Amino acid sequence: MITMSNRIELRHLKYFLAVAEDLHFRKAADRLFISQPGLSRQIKQMEENIGIQLFERTNKKVSLTKPGIYLRQEITLILKNLEEVISHAQLLQEGIEGKINFGYVGSAMQNVLPDLLLRIRENHPNIKFSLKEMENPKQIDRLLLQEIDLGFVRLNRVPRGLNIHPIFKDTFSIVLPMNHPITNENFKNLSQLRDESFILFDQSYSTDYYNEVMNIFNDNGFSPTISHNTVHASTIFKLVENNFGISIVPSTLQYGYQMNIKFIELDKISQRTILSVVWNSSNRNPILNKILNYII
Image (cartoon, rainbow, N blue to C red; front, top):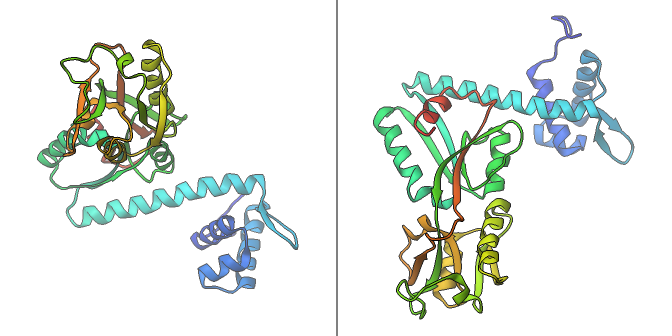
């Protein structure tokens, strides 16, 4: 039991995390600008104070024990929360209401995010925000680590501890070079394009999204020839523009790009792609609920 007489200090936690990350006492000591024997003593003192062996040590390697693995995860979150609390207090000192960090897939910037940011600026001019475009899986990782507060993703399911809420249902569109003979006027169904090469978002972008696109092909009676996979819409459009293939993307992605391509909306098919907002239920950012009120 930790008492007032043998409690651990903040430096112990930072030293522990450094060793837990490097799994090498000398490397961790160099990074912390202390001696290796000094670091070893601090870790030993921490282990004695809490009565837990944190590391398995041999002549060849250092590894975390099961309690050490658990503490690494929890202490990382605790220190992250402490940093956020201090950062928020500093913002309040400066007369700023708070800060919110967004992650998003590119299509969210075409309609959902700009409207949201305008509402935030109008109603909460003293809230700061940061924006970072990133793939769906990376957003989930950052949300779990609470490195971002809100994510805008094309996923149907998220890990335990995260909340997800659909906010926009989008149609799909075919993307063609501007000089392609298929037009809105003569397009009947996707089977007209069965002999084309397709450039698609990679399955790593979102398995749910990828499966929905594959269902479109299944309903039209053929499996596509996929020449390229990517996670970036700009790459897809550039390849289509240069006649390397055609594509299927969320319809909202047609806005904001000035390229020599055209879109045919597949508004008669049943498939839709859902843009959802995701957040960590453990996130204690006091601004988060204010922003969610504008979304859900």
